[in-house]
Image (cartoon, rainbow, N blue to C red; front, side):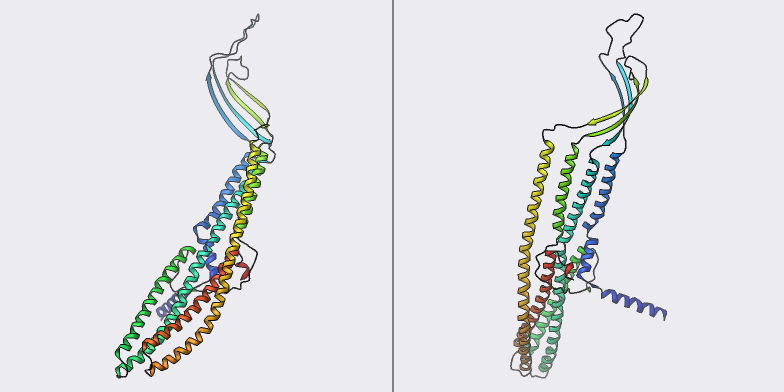
Length: 423
């Protein structure tokens, strides 16, 4: 009894898993989480932290060790003779080891400017990743709604198959009773086989689409996955909320910070230094013995003239900002043109659906008449199949237009960047 209960629970769980559902929002969330590009966000944060930590080390004393030995062709000598005193010239071979510590005191905010530049550079890169991930949503939409289309086609074809099987049984019975010709039964059987082929094609196409969606969102999907059909309301909007706009703005901020960094790089820098050494000679060049020594002091560095190199670099950055403004306007223009076409597609699909809803009842009425005529032998099975096919073509058109309408709405909201605002 315990084994039976365990098996029952297992099969119930398996069935629940087999009927798993997935929404478009789920796909977007999985895309942002699992797509390989998404991993760059955390890596860029790590890189930024390392860069800023390295820059901040410049605030600490910097130590330099130098060891040098030389031999020179001549040395300093005193060309006079002092009675009672002997002045020895230094050796031509000299040795020196020094340890120097430098502490930056004033640098006009250069280190802070470097840190801000690294932060903005990381933000620009992360924004570029967001743009790339966002543009992948169009591919998700393509796979998602294509799968929905295949599902609706399968439902309609299965419905058509059920009707044909019912007619086939009726005709087959009539053939056995000698009321109808055998060719009538063969014609319906051939049409049923044709439907079997269509179902196989739909299954193969759907499998490929599911695999494609699975690759994008980084999650295995069963062929039995049930996709929820989105329902959104769309009004024509004039506001773009695309991540590209933030990307352009961040690029301009980065350039502004680079220009600020260039300005600070030519400002005066003051540092303190301390140096200790041991060598032959020491600071007294006339002492030929090894000796230790030290010196401390302040140092000012200031590049007072660079042939306007720094100024020209900043002017070049200003031109870059203008180029970014141009690219931003081009993007907005192209996006607006795209939304105009998408809104026209939405309106066209709405009009087609209205017509479909009028055509289907008429086709159903014609088919109902054809069924009665077929039973009474007034028309042939071929005529009946023609009317049946026309009805299901009309139903397929309706479902196709309905799904494409929702698809067009989602694409429109994705293009304008307002999908999240319409849910």
